[in-house]
Image (tube, rainbow, N blue to C red):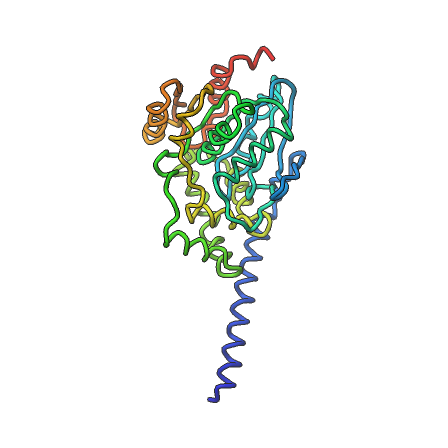
Length: 321
C-alpha cells in the first residue's frame, strides 16, 4: 500500500474519531441540561472584568452573602433551601462563582487571588456595604483572603466545613500541570472531563461525602449538580482543570493570623471535619465551632433547619433587623 493511501486512511480514521468524540460530548451536554433546572430562579448578573457573575438577591435588611463550595458542579443552588428564610430579615445575595453554575466560564487559569478579587469587587460594586458572609468548603480561603485584601468589606464570617489548611497550601507540580493541559484539550480533554463528572460519580459523591444519610438525598439535588457540571457545553472543565492542577493554592494560616473578624465554623458530624476545624482554632483561638448532628459536608442541603438555627445563634441580630 502506497504512502498516499496510508495517509488517506489515517486522515479518514482521525476525522471519524474526532467526529465521534464530538458527538459523544454533545450528547452528554444535551442529556445533562435537558431539564434546565438551574433556570427556575430570577436572574441578575454583575458584569465583572473576567465575565458575567450570576447572583440571586432577595429580602431587605443587613446584607448577607452566601458563597458555595468550589467545584465545577457547585452553584448557588447549594443555598436554595435557606434563602427564603434568611430573606425575611436580611438582604440575601447568593452568587455563582466564576466558572460555576450560570456565571461565565472563561478559558483561563483560576487562582485563589482571582476569586479574592471577584468577591472584593462584587461586595464593593453590587452589595455596596459591609456584609456578613456564609461560605462552604474550598471557597473559605477566598473570604479570608478578601478580608485581608480589604478590612472594610466583610463583617462576620461563618464557614461550613472549611478547606483543610495543609491541603490548600499544595502547589502545582509536573504531574498536576500535565493533567491540567490534558483536560484543556478541545475534544479529548472534554471527553475526559465528561467521564470524570458523569452522573454516577456525582451520585456517589453525595452518598460518600456530601450527605451523612443517603436516604436524605433527593434526585433533584443530584440532577442539579450534574447539570451545573455541564451547563455551557462543559466549559466548567476550565475550572476543573485549574483545581486538578492545584492552581488555587492559598496560605490560610497567614490569612487567619491577620484577621480580627468574628469567625464561626459549622461542621458536619464526621470526625475529619471536626479535626480540620480545630486546626483553624489552634491558629485563631477566638473562632467558635459547632457541629450539626448526623450531617456531612453539605448540611445546608441535608439539614437546612439545623444550619438556620445555628446562624440565628451566631448572627443574633437577624431578628432585630
